[in-house]
Amino acid sequence: MKKVVFVIKTGLELLITIENSDLTEREETFLEVLILNIVSPVNAQISGVGMVFNPLPKNKDDVFHCNIFWEKSLDEIEYKEFKNTIDKRVKVALKMAGLSNIDIQYRES
Image (cartoon, rainbow, N blue to C red; front, side, top):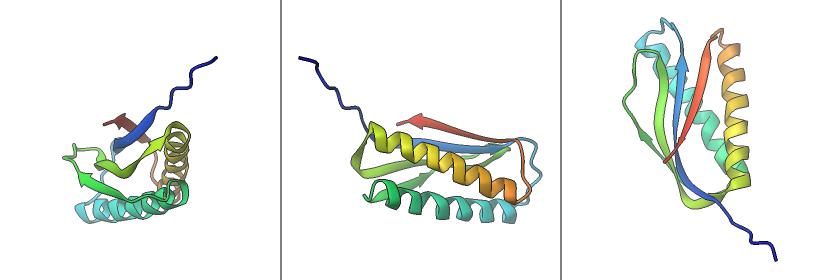
């Protein structure tokens, strides 16, 4: 009999960097709001559970940096779908805004 192991995820650190961006503080704030307005509906669509954002310090090229924690653990399939959907939607939105050199990193927390 094969043993099934479920990997569950309760949180992640999301870091979005735009290399050599010369964005103003106001433009960075707009991008943060845009990203939050992308991530929240993606979460609702994929997991349907509550989540919280904990802002983290940013470096020069960082436009978004936070920890995301879910109310209830996500299984591996939901977690991968969440990350893939965020990648696609955020990159498209930032490219439509005329930005390039976009890097999205995830660290499990």
